[in-house]
Length: 378
Image (cartoon, rainbow, N blue to C red; front, side):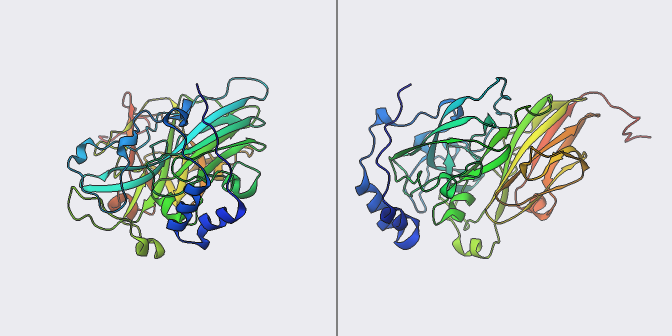
């Protein structure tokens, strides 16, 4: 695989321009003057962590675009079953990872077209899974068709801005950093430009899991889910992009609260539920992008058998929690036992978000009835 050629890093003055001391337009002019865009052959591959459903054709110009065939827009909702396997090696390793910022026009729900900001074309961004003591060789590219600057703040990093300063990119640029993950846990990463709240709300967040040397306890099945709220104005019609609502974000009153960037996306109303089998133990890696709302993450019809708050994998897990509070910008790792066949509804128990604002995900557990545990016809 041919590596991209990292461009010259921004000067401190250019970075300050990009981070809000000048307008976004002036920032982009500075970024464009700072470096030439890499050729198509130099664009970063997303390697193991790319989202196969993403496409540069999903990007478009900013501002109320008309879409003739919204049913042909790409899916941005990450597949919750697409989880990297646990590290199965001994000793420290170096991982070459490629992340690409893509601004993607897609349907938030039927009739609502929204301009998502993504890592590798998906929400949440790809889950990265490594082991404490490993080294990350990270290449970050901004799609040439993007209109905004982007960067990444990793909560798993010792370093200024979690790497955000060194990773600031204008459209078509590539940045490269290397860092060692020194502490275990499940950590968010997110865009951290001046309008970071808008960018995170639009989908620019993901999770890095740094497992302790002994690894996590084995389970039968794993899922990856991200929650965020979206502030958007009503669309003109079903074929016109709905614009971001800055006033609603300032008041922290979102029109939608979503799992994986889609209205009821992980249910039969959307892309379909997750699936598991009776007697399995499942693990969920959960990240709350926010940018503003905490999640009271709750499994309706079950309980968190084991739970690591704030992604604290170095700590002893709590047991049998009905809900777990996940602040914006944090994570949780939770597990469930499945003694009966049922449909588990995953919800935020700030329940209006589940009932009315689009938050919903289901796990359909197949198996046989067990009337000793639950009998709906006694």
